[in-house]
Length: 85
Image 1 (spheres, rainbow, N blue to C red):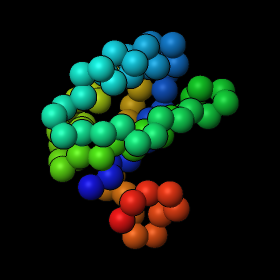
Image 2: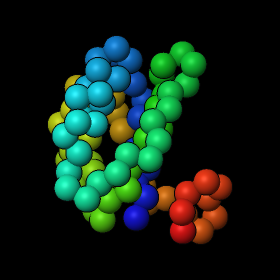
Image 3: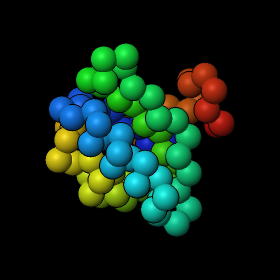
C-alpha cells in the first residue's frame, strides 16, 4: 500500500535533515515514492510504499517527531494520478 505522511513542520531544517537520514534506513520492503514540501516549508507530504501504516508511522516519528506533527493515511491509489495501482 502507499502510505501518505502529511506533516505540519515546526523546524524545516531539522525535519528534512531527519528525512535524509531516514531515507538511508528504510524498513525492509519499503520504498520512498515522494517527498515534497510547501514553498514556505510549513507543510510536507511524503508517500512511502509499505505493507503497514503503523510501521511507517513508527519509522517516520523516530526521525521527525520532534520537529513536525504528522498524520498518516493509506492512499487511494485507484483514484490517484501517478501512483501504480
